[in-house]
Structures are given as C-alpha cells and as structure tokens.
Image (tube, rainbow, N blue to C red):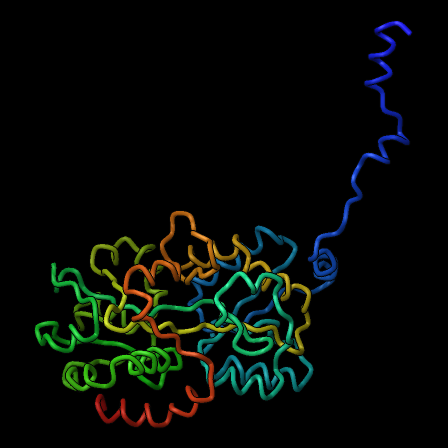
Amino acid sequence: MPVLALVAAALFVGPATARIDSPTATPGPLAGLIKASKKESGLVFYGNPPSANWKVVTDRFQYYYPWIKTTSYDLDNNVIFSKYASESSQGIRTADVLVSSAGNLWVYATRQKYLNQYAPLELAKFPSFVQQYKGVYILSPDPAIIVYNKLTLKDKVPSSVTALANDASYGTLTGYTVDNLFGYPGIWGYVQKKGWGAFEKIGKSRMKAQTGVSGQLQLVSQGGANAAFLTSPTARFTIANNSSLQNILGWTYVRDAQPLIPRGIGITAKAKSPASAKLFLNWVYSKAGQQAMCDAGFTAFRNGFTPKNCANSLDAVYKAVGRANVIFSPFSQKFVNDYPRFKSRWHGIFG
C-alpha cells in the first residue's frame, strides 16, 4: 500500500469506531433536581437577613439558575416561623426555605416537623457544626462585631467588650437588646466565656440598646453612641457599600470573647418548589455559593476554601482573635432553657 494511503487509513476513523472510543455521558448528581425545578413556580424565602445583603446571594444564585425566580421576605424571627405554620396549615403558597438566627425557634420547628430533612451533597466539606438537626443547617456562622465611630474615638479603636466596659472614656454605647433573637445568641456566647462583669460595668447609664442593626448603625454614625458591641456582621457590607459611612464607621472583631451567631437554613416540609430549594442549598454550600456569602457580608466557612478579594471568612475570625477565644452558640436545648434567666439578668442590668 502506498505511504499516503497508509497515512489516510490511520487518520480515518469510521462511525462505528468513534462510538466505541467515546466515553458515555452520565447525568450529574443534580440533573434530576434541575429537570424538576424547571416545572416549579420559583423559590420563596422567609428570613431575617437584611434585604440588601440577601439580594447579593439570590442574584448570584440566579446567575447559575436563571430560570428560578426568587422572592424574599425580610421578617422578624418569630414571624418567619409563625407565618409558615399558618400558611402551610391552610394549604396556601408559603416559604420554600426558612433562614433565621433564632435557635429556640429552630428547636421548635424541628419538633413540629416543619422541615424537609434533605441534606446538601457537600456538607462533609464543612465544620461539624454545619448540621444542627436533620434538615437544619448553618448557613453562616456570623461573628458578632464591634462597630465604632472613627471621628469621635479617633485612634482609640475598641477591640473587646472588656475594653469598652473598663474605660469610661468610650462613653455611650449601643448593642442589641436581649429580646432580639439575633442579640441573645451573641450575649449568651459572650457570657459563656467572660461572664456578666463587663455588662455590669457598662451599666444602664452608658447603654442605649436597639432592636436591630440598622438602628445601631444610625445611632453610632450620628454620634448618639460611640460604639455598638456584639452587633451583626452584616454591618460590614453596609459600611463597605456606603461612602458616607466608610468615612465615619470602622469595625473590629471581639478579641476577649468572640461569639459566632449561627444563621440557620432549612427547606420547608410543604415547599411548593422543593427541587429549586434543594438546588439552592447545594449551591450555597458550593465554592461559588461560599464566595457569594462572603461578598454579601456573611461568613464563608467551607473547609479549605479561601474567598477571592473578600475577608469575611471563619478562618479570618480564627486568625484575628485566636480559635480558643471563639464560642459557637448552638441550637441546643440548653441554649433555649437559658433564655428566661439571661433575659431577666440582662434587663436587671440595662433596664
């Protein structure tokens, strides 16, 4: 056979041979959910994250799943669960996903079987605390932070509640009331490490408690208080995205005892879009989802993952304050049982 004919024969592969050599395509683990989600009616969230922060997350999710319309309601913790309970009992459209920092209400929701027990595929890539109960997961372990007025305090940067308490020159302070179900986990966590001494030194005369982070930021930025302690880390996003606040406010971690306030997430048992909800959970625990959480001012905490151009991660907290100074406030029965005693003690100090 001529040389050119040999070359041509070697280069030509017939259809039968091509079929033998090509690997068989296999559906990905989410293929069934993707197919089912395209027949659903969008994704409804009831949650407590500030709307601006949460929109960053849902917008990023829609980049990956553009056919899934998301609708989010920013609600008080109590309303998140009571609204779902009422609507689901009537069989009307309700939340597919709940997001809340209220440990006591997650315990209650678990007992009432409000939740689908679906487990995202990559939970093993997270710290063990990521699963609190079957169907209840930690969306973000939010570090309570200190926000301070750079203009009034100048170079006197507070780095601990102890420092704020011991130095009266820090003046008037603000923070959550214990009645707020984001505030209580931060107070509970701090007390586990340091007790009540710092709170007692601050006392009623120096404290202007607020029910939400927006009120605290307003008070500090306007000079009504010089610092907010054990406040929400979503303030980081607010400050970073507001040029006026950038010039006025700074923030630090709490170096004497750093509470992690868990923001939980769960798919509802009566979700109308369960496949879309499961896709969201799988995505938020992926690297792309963790990057979005960091960018939105929440806390990325996937093991071995370093967010790009963003420092809002659990590793950053550990590096800043030391792992031994960090306390996680779990969704436990002890945490729930302690609330009446903590509430009484807090109001006894601050009124």
